[in-house]
Length: 187
Image (cartoon, one colour):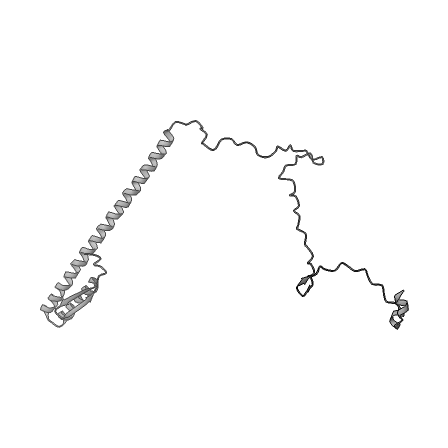
């Protein structure tokens, strides 16, 4: 039957179609039955009450089926929980009753040889305590040297020239050179 509680029905009653869920149809036919009894129409009132009773029975049956399914699911879940608890207790009892097994090394977990050299700790003269590798300061790490940028090489008509060597420092100009005297400058 599916989920009748939320299903929408079209009911053809004496006054025409009534559409809705079973509870809405029950409410509508009950209201029509009250109106008919107020109008002193006992036949119409009885007819509306019979329609309302039909949908009341449908709704009640659907709710009983849903409740039965819910109880069945809860019973299954409870049985499953009880089975799991019983299995858990059995495992605990088996672990407690099991004789102690000797320690058997697992494959691949044999004792490994020492890899590094053995360093004998030396006592500190000041404190009398032994220095361990954990107490020693970490060695300083060197920073890479920064290089000075090179001067770009001169390019002349497709020929690359090497940078010029540092020229000797020029002597300061003498007053005779400034006056235009070339004889003293040649000396």
